[in-house]
Length: 100
Image 1 (cartoon, rainbow, N blue to C red):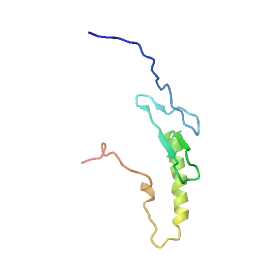
Image 2: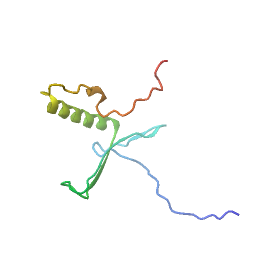
Image 3: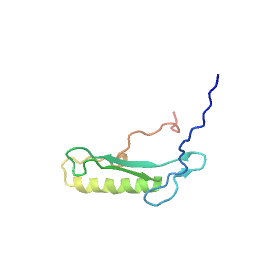
Image 4: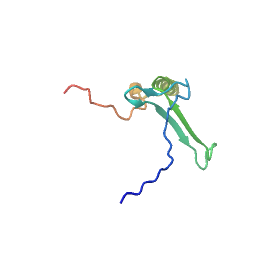
C-alpha cells in the first residue's frame, strides 16, 4: 500500500557568485562554481566563525591567482622554492579527453 504525503522541500533555484553577483548556472551542465570555506575552531582568533563564499569560474581563478602570487612573494628568496605554481591548489585533473 502506498502512503503519499506532500512534504515541503527546498530547491536551489540559483547559486550566484559572491564576488561578481552573476549566476553560476551553465546551460546544460547545472551549477559550476568553486567554494572557499572555513570553520574556525578553539584557539583561533575567529573561534566559532564559519565562512562560505561561492565563486564563479572566472572569480575563482582570479582569487587563486592572487593566492598563487602571494605564495610566490613569500617564497621568493627561499633556497629551494617550490615551483609547482601551475598546479597550485589542483587536487585532480580529469583525463577524459586525453589521447591514449
